[in-house]
Image (cartoon, rainbow over all chains, first blue to last red; front, side, top):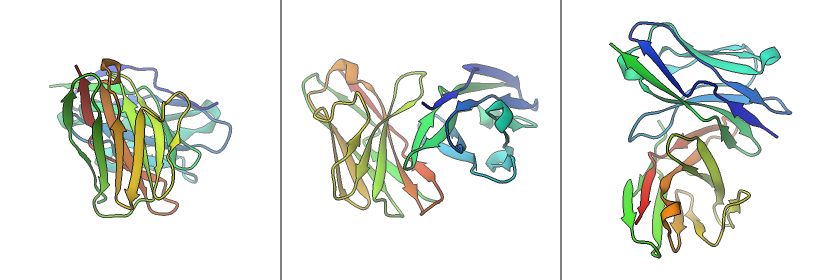
Length: 112
Length: 116
């Protein structure tokens, strides 16, 4: 069975500091992995995705993620956080015909 | 970019009544749409896959007679919560994949259902 684990429920960082959100997955086939951001009143927005190829994936808003097969991880990073990055972040694994299996999410708080 | 809308964004209903939630793909056609449920401070759980022109596919544990799904056109799927109870109160989100192999889903803004 598949699983997606986001170990950190809530993270607080200072504006301008670097950020890393952790995601670990378990899946018996080639993983297709995604990071989404959810802001209040808005739909989930895709930040980036990994299907194959280069293990370092660049996304929107200055985010990047690195796929590490040996560690079953797909951590999201940003070198300098902005106050507007405060939101809920979800890691997701594609299973079956376009089904997405989501992690429990990490809430990011940015302090000035 | 692709946009998926949901209506209403928020609804309050009395226990025992039915509520319909619409999901529309505004600038693309979607033969498949997905319905998710999100409890407070929890993840999104897939409820069902809506298929245009055929029956929806429900995930294990989801009551198909309670959560009626109709995918009447290539741009519209509806979720009807029948005989709603307070435990049905939740955030319902739909999504639609766009493009053949892009595997990218576009999500609606969600509908907050409160059953009193």
